Length: 266
Image 1: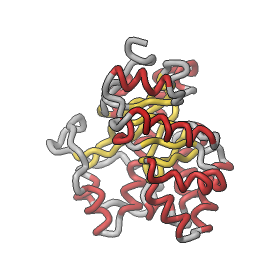
Image 2 (image 1 turned 45 degrees about the horizontal axis):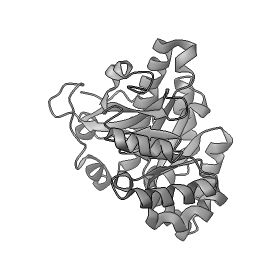
Image 3 (image 1 turned 60 degrees about the vertical axis):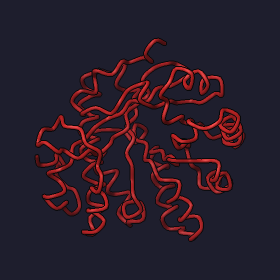
């Protein structure tokens, strides 16, 4: 399958990589309203040649990095995700579609590239999606590197995206990352997503971490919600969003509308 990258993408992903990638979406929900808040775009390896095939992208991004094409792969996934998201918005109509957010992941090669802002805004423009509908996920470990290295140019690019109402999230946050909270506040991080293993740990530790992040005014996403007990706990702790297999597993982009618009059993 040739990936639906659209026109105007800088560079091109090697066909051997592009042919193996399909777009999946996993839903996440607003715990204050119980409504579907948005969709996280996930690249999946198509192991059967069918666009509906599942398959974790084991080695996929490593292969792209080895070929010096990590950024190109990220941009292809971004383009495909925004294209699918535009179609989903149109299908849902103004009332439901306009409140949804699409989340995409970005690696260092993408974030640190001088064309970051142009790449992202061009993709949004091609599909007529406003900046406030996009949330860019940055691994917490990458953010730590940017802070430690005092990479002012890259951090300024993130602020430039924010000036265009595009948000960014620290993804995979744990209690070992609490020392990053001052830098997150200084840079203007919009939201933090906890690593799924945090939710799988002790409730007291989760509560302390949640309070620490909320005390600096950052919303928290609970990732890895797999049981009704975990869902009840993150509600009690005041988490803004939740995501996990209990609420919806990743599915092919074409099946996204099968996800409920409100939390199951809400």
